[in-house]
Image (cartoon, rainbow over all chains, first blue to last red; front, side, top):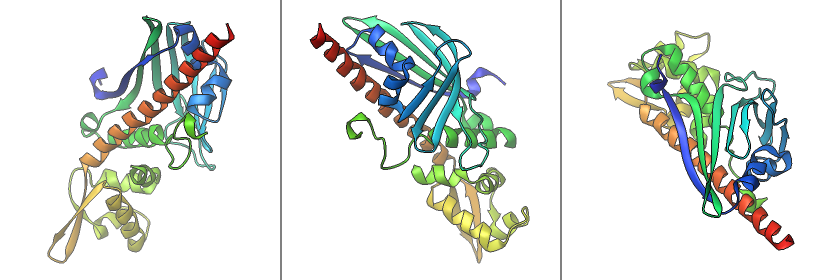
Length: 154
Length: 105
């Protein structure tokens, strides 16, 4: 009902690289693949495709919404059907916002992933509860054990 | 946490969890809601229990099941961790790139 019913994952990271460099790691398919998955298909313009093979078979899918290089990026985020089974959370069902701010010689990156209702708010309605569970599963899918634990292992 | 995600990936298990979110039910009562055998329901309950998503309580000869909200809070933590790892990877790669560029100049 209200936005406070949503849970967001928020993080800040200091990066010793210029915003222009970091920006490339958000929109260049080859560079996105280096930190987020094994392969990426990106069309970085509003309405353009955002698709990343995060871990074999787990494919993130969304759409670019806002691009203000090298300052601000917004795109939707969800997961594709797996093994012929329709995923309850369709591609594009949550939102990721990334802001880059110059900080000394580097960049302060602010990350926000929202669109995940929390348990408390969902408790009131069975529908919301199931919705919440499904979203969590889907958002959490990116992590399969043993693979892609970071670039060092690739 | 992997166990919780796998447990929740099954639509039937999500339905069971929804059923026991507000109160305790026995395996038989749960089975009555679905077109499945009781052993199948017991199997699902075992998976949910091992994933920390439901609690089991004995009441005489009956076993009662109820959703465990902490299990879901842990999932939220897991998501935080997932993104933390990814963003650390982004940091490493961007910094490596910056250094390489510096050397090229």
